[in-house]
Image (cartoon, rainbow, N blue to C red; front, side, top):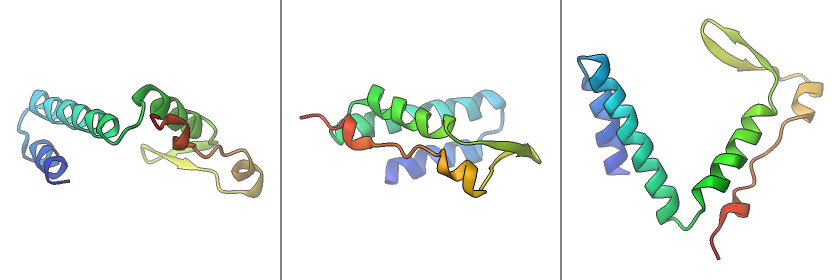
Length: 88
């Protein structure tokens, strides 16, 4: 996790938006490699994660997505099954 902290600190220390974007990009590449190195198929991991996100109902509150947590909304939530992404 040390490398992730290093990439995150790059974002926090950025002066220009381009430096910030570079830090985000480096973090994304680090995460993608970590997923693959852990023995998971990145495409399937992403598909599962997006299915989970897309199953949520909510609203933007102060610029942030807030999930509706009523029983009906929560009953529709999909839980990502990352076991589907394990490489054999």
